[in-house]
View 1 (cartoon, rainbow, N blue to C red):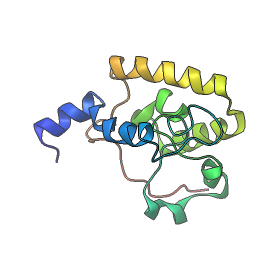
View 2 (cartoon, rainbow, N blue to C red):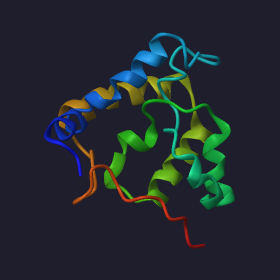
View 3 (cartoon, rainbow, N blue to C red):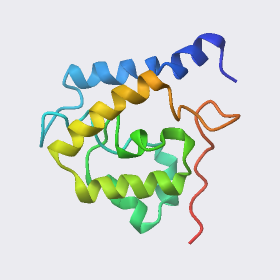
Length: 132
């Protein structure tokens, strides 16, 4: 159960500011492009690692980011399977131009407040693995 303050921070995406601060301070140091650390598959809980299919594991081919293709295409309002598919698509199509597009789309999504959570959840249900 989230407090009123936490709900406000979550719904406005202000809860992401500490991670952005870490990127700007260089703690998530860019390697390949100016936007690395900002854009990439979102880091997930370590306990999910053994639950990934081999295809879903491909999302780890790139460094994680604050925002990514899955965040601008549904965020927490889509299923885990859709989220992983979008992350893998991003891995296969990663480019500076796509990263810039994602950053622009992220700004729009923040102001539009879309996909913040699944109905009845603070964010979304916990990942239980994919049935193949």
